[in-house]
Image (cartoon, rainbow, N blue to C red; front, side, top):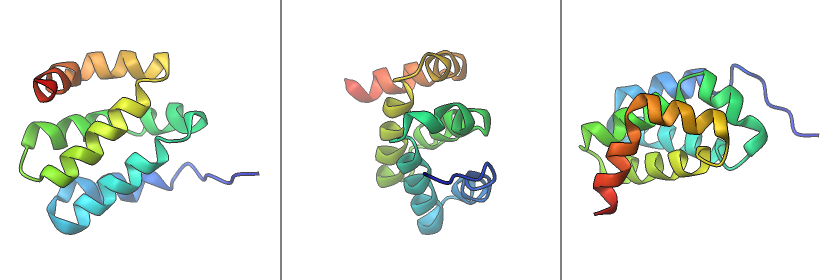
Length: 99
């Protein structure tokens, strides 16, 4: 069985907020966790939606932005995450990137 301790993404989320190369890699790691729908609830609870929205809003690292978009798109597969995405305002960011 897959082992996922709840505290795994907490350090990644903190690191991702710092920006830079390490922050970009942390955004990549968090976005990779979004490939597993069974983890969505916990990832959303820990603040990944807000992190991804902030990375897109800052717009200073196109690589990190790509990972953030990927993470939001994956999270949008679950209803709870979709609600949080709407609440965070990230729908507007995604719409503007799609144009």
